[in-house]
Every structure is written in C-alpha cells, then in structure tokens.
Image (spheres, rainbow, N blue to C red):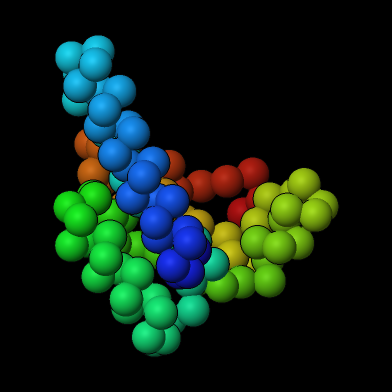
Length: 109
C-alpha cells in the first residue's frame, strides 16, 4: 500500500529476499506490487519514488483502491468488476516480466 510504513516494510522484505538469494547462491525473482493505491496522490508518488530509488523491481501496473478487494477479503470470493480488471493488469505485467503466457479467460466470463 502507499503508506510510509508499508514502503519501509517492502524495502526490508526486498533486502531479505536478496540476502536469502545470496546465501543460497541463486537469484530470486521478486517484484513489488502496489496494492490499494489511490491514483494521483502525493503519498503514492513518494512511495513509488522511494521504491524505485532503492532499486526494488516494481510491477508498473498497480491494483488501485477498489471496494471489490475489501469485499473479496471478507467474503473469500474472487474479485469482481473493476477490482478484477485491476488485478488482471497486474497479473499480465507479472506474466510478461516472468516470460510466461498470460491466461486471459476465467470461469466467470
């Protein structure tokens, strides 16, 4: 999320992933995914700048703030409507960076 606390936690997690990779002698593909983002806010811009400035690889697509994500967390069901579209953008970006084919269909249309 675009908060100072989450940004610091993200950078600590990224450093930990890199340390684990160094310890086992392997590169670990890890990407920062921005969730529950309020577009066009100063805090979002500052958090993105901090993450990018630290060299953490960030998925350019973001999951914008959508009620569907909160509903998904409480109901356990899949995201719907604009939340689903937002999630698809992120999944497509991840798939492209990982070099895998993105599955565009789903059981719900």
